[in-house]
Image 1 (cartoon, rainbow, N blue to C red):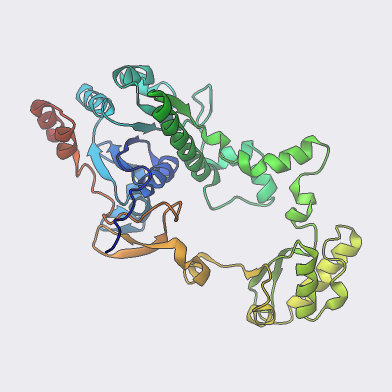
Image 2: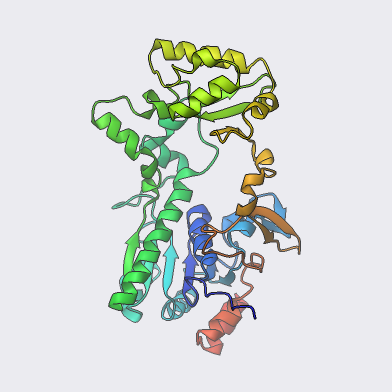
Length: 379
């Protein structure tokens, strides 16, 4: 007899997602993966702007499809008194509310955290402002620039991936899980603030401590590419190899296997001799295609791997357990990154919802008067 599947950690937890764009989407997805019911609250006229970002699948932006599979959509104009009243009614029975407006916006709508928690003391409200203490505006590029992350990672350019947005969403997820545990003990919810500006900080904490102690930051250390044993090398076909042989035994084995044993003693040397080793190894690896060198180290359990493009990573076998067949609005599936915590999470089997698809049903379930539902549907 097959044992029933264990309940997911957040089964029975209802989350209202009033956020917009990537930070809230990352947060919502992490909670949905853990079993929470996430109800996306959107402007009924336009919805979350991620819906419009191409490429579109079934008329919905693929990013929205991937982050919001397994959720419900309720269309509410919070600037309208009926929309605000409807959200307050939903918040009265929810467990978590996520919002990412500029500070003061929810108060203008009559939806201040204090008022929502007066109605429902168990409610956990998580805000995702850009900054703490003011209403300044910014985007990922600004937050990574202000925190020192940008120049530490990309001295000559800008990252194409959204670092602050994604990390802030994940940090907020951790904070919400802790708040729910605290609520279980005390019976009280709380207010959380996870500024997007703090998103890059976990990446730069070590580097900033180096600078504070009089050092030059991580770029001048072995983790910043200052030694031969920890850097990327371009091979003869233009493809790159990520060599992460920080432990001496690994570098010695690598140098020997690729045919340069005389370089085995200087892989972790940051001096000019080490720089000469970098140059010698780069010239040597550029003499053959990447596949040649990967074949040399295959089966030797070394931290030496190819540097993939996203298209190549889609076929990387080591990533296969971390992918999911994400359901799409047009009935197809898309191979994408799986649950945030594979050991605890799941792949929701329903695609991202159409804008406002669940408005009437959810409001009726939460006890909204029929007249209010009718007015909201009409608008």
